[in-house]
Image (cartoon, rainbow over the protein chains, first blue to last red):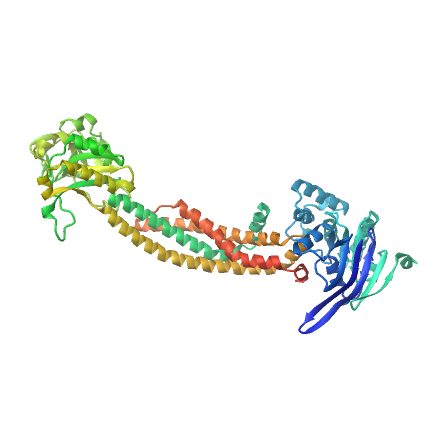
Length: 229
Length: 409
């Protein structure tokens, strides 16, 4: 479903060109639960930004179901982020002045979906992550785990092609982190494609497949079978 | 859009002090403009009707003796030589489209008035039925002169408060008799001529005045008494025009011999009023310039605070962009906030300006007029200030790269 080929990304620092990603090639199938793992500075955040259409590579190609993800201008990329990708961030990134429901509604507003429909879908999404009783809470009144679940509800609400989670348990205690990972696993069982970026091996091992990245290069892949073996 | 406005209000109210300080420039600028416009409009309106129209769109057509006009004289009226005016001529003036009313009256300062041992030296008017339409007055005692009395020769009189005070210092005036040139006149009512808000024309100065029917004038002044003509125009714009037309009609009746020495004309108050208006315009331009500078400074303040707001909300912008908000959504959000901010400032400024105008008019006695076009104009202008000075910060916000914005702490 997702195909990255020969992704190269570099930043210019003065006259020097610093490569961040070198020749990244990999594919993700629909329904997969993939972890991209690497230490900090490995380039995994840059890779996640490219996967999330938040940034463009210097060269290479990126396609989602035969759709070229790099061809469009900013407006097209915004549409792709809105409809094809569900983001979950380490620090949740909820808007503090909006209630849980309003936060979940945001992607639907940008899709120009009518208010009534919006409310209904946002509520269903929150129900799915087990927060039906917290819809009118502001983020400040929610625990970390609850905030992340609101973020997941927001990621799911527009039925994206895949969920892109950046260190989703990074800011959570073990217990809530465990709940979030279980939620991802459950969603994956229902057919949601999940790509998770992490530096934590324990977290990465919850995925079906791990892709290792170091110094901007993919090192190896582990299949779920070998993981469990 | 409505959502944007709601969010803007929320964000403005969450930083009350900052918002008020930011709006201050706009508030002061708009308040200054509204106050200036209110006072100038009030003043020129008062000038127009008071100076030109004697408060009631009315102008006197005077019979001027040319021989007495010279250097240093503006208008010198020689009442004594004015020929009587024919009834058809009056009807003809009355039928003009810009004329609302005509009154013929006599005026005299030559007659002493007595009641028992009291005496007064009043200004006496012999008036016709139309007079009070042109020169309204307020009755305080007794009754008005009736229509029958005004068209007939009843020996009745209406006196003002000053005349009553002089002739009837401690008694009832209504029903009493006043003696003028040996002829008794019965007092039917007392009126007041202290007209409020007419400080320009009347001031505080009053004197005894009496109104009696025009028909009895020959008893006091003889049949050859000159007549004065007052013309009321349908609106303040038509005063001069109506007066000149009436003068032309009256002049047409004069014999060529008369015309050599004297003819009817009206004072060109319009010109004076226009000069005053031009002066007011200069004044308005000057103060408007100062107000504009204040608005410019206010606008820069708005721009500054909007830039701060964009920086503060970089992460929020990043989140929204990551979730699929397009550029224009971010642009509109910030632009709306800037417009709401300046419009709110404008609205407060309008309120403040009206207050200032009211206050100035209270302490100086200058009239003021709330100008609806100025209010609407100010609101539009303050919105415009918001657009102009909000555009740069909003564009900056909309151009933020989502990656950079999300990374911002």
